[in-house]
Each structure stands twice: as structure tokens, then as C-alpha cells.
Image 1 (spheres, rainbow, N blue to C red):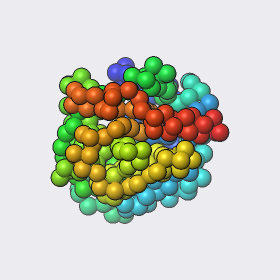
Image 2 (image 1 turned 180 degrees about the horizontal axis):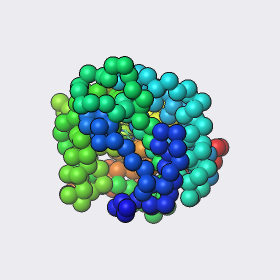
Image 3 (image 1 turned 90 degrees about the horizontal axis):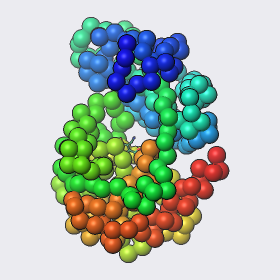
Image 4 (image 1 turned 90 degrees about the vertical axis):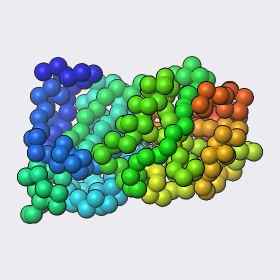
Length: 289
Ligand code: PMP
């Protein structure tokens, strides 16, 4: 079977077996398919080594606990699975996608009693890092309302709100959307957003309204190393539009400058000094792996 965009003969993990991507099958009664009842992680690997694995596994445990999904698997199990997928990946720099759902049972909202085995799926893909040119070009974004649910802190596979927001950005020919809830900055559709004002790096407070990206804690550390003051607080729409710089972070984007917002340049439209300092620290962190 040809699956659009999928390298059919790449190997995926499904419920204890390593199988070709085009042969992996799950039941139509899987609760991930029926209800979006599951969680996931995306871990980048550089040169076949996972980046910030401990933090990813901690977030995975938090997500699983938040949706009351007991897998019976240990942290070591997840770490070993990730490393196996990294080793089997076709490229040295790869992305590992891990998804766990509440398993297969008759369609009923309440959890299956007794619990059924979770569905565990893991795949890998090539990680093409942002090029030097992309780092200078930055990304273009639009602003939009945050119309998602009130548990954006859970890395849930129920991503319809994110999908629809990202689609609007795509249809407007830009890379991302900066979302606002009640006129306060939350995050992108698949990334965290940062504002620089008067030399201080600002982040929205970590709460149920944003996903704590693995780069959230990392950027705070990198800011400290670079001597950049960091503050987490509520950030208004007006502050975003008056920012000296806006940064975006995610596993795929690493850290990039946002150089255009709703068609107007951010700051002077060029990558700013705080971006450059944080970027340099980020690269150092990767080279320490
Ligand atoms: N927010 C959302 C909604 C995301 O989907 C992502 C990407 N997983 C992020 C933030 C950034 O998280 P990370 O730095 O762990 O990639």
C-alpha cells in the first residue's frame, strides 16, 4: 500500500513488533482513532543520539498521568525503544514519533473495564535541520484566536484545534500562527513563541493554556548562559506587536526568528541580537551531545 508522504519500507514499531511502515495496521476500534484518546512525543536525534531525552520522557509520563493511562511500561522501556528506532532510522539526524493510545475496545466514552493493552506506535523520519539560509530568513506568521481546549499542557493526539490553526496559516502562505486567548499570547499551532523587549526574553507562563515545549526550560537555561534576562509572565497582544524580536521554538525548528507578523516586519525585520545569542547557545548544546 502506498501511503502519501510515507517511506513505505521504513520500519515502525507497533505493539512489540518492528514492521514495514506500509504493513503496520491497527484496529478501527482503536480509541486513538475513535476518540483521539492518546498522547504522543516527538524526539529529535542528532548523529543517532536523542536530544533532551530525559525531559521528553518526563513530559510523556506527565501526559500519560493527565489522561489516566497506565501503560505498565517503565521509563527504561521508552528510552530503549527510542534508541532502537534511532539506530534503525535511515538518517543520522532523525525524529522519533511515539504515540500511545488507550487501546482497542467497543466504542464507549468511559475507559474500558478491565483496562485493555494500550496501542504503542513508534516511527522515525529524517530530521532536516534549519539551514543557515532559513536561520537568516526566519519565519513568517499571522496572528489568530486560540480556539483550542483548556488542556493544551497535555501532549494529546487530539490536535484538531492545532490542525485547523496551522491550516489557516498555510492557506495564507505563512509558516505559523501566533495564537491569543483573551488577548494574551499563548503559543503557535506546533511551537512555542517568545518575545524580546528591551533585551529581556519573555515567555508566557507555563500553565494549562500552553504545551511546555522541551525547549521552554532549555531556552531559560540558554538565556542565563548568554547573560540574557528571562521572565515568564502574561504577555499581551500589544506587547507582541511592539516586540523588538519574536522567537519560535520546537523540536523541528530548534530556535528561529519570527521576522514577519501579519504582513509587517517584526523589529527591523532582521534576526536580532538576542536571537543570535540564544541560537549560538543552542548550537553549543547540540554539539555537547
Ligand atoms: N506547542 C505545541 C502546541 C506543539 O505542538 C509543540 C511541538 N511539539 C511545541 C509547543 C513545542 O514543543 P517542543 O519544543 O517539545 O517541540
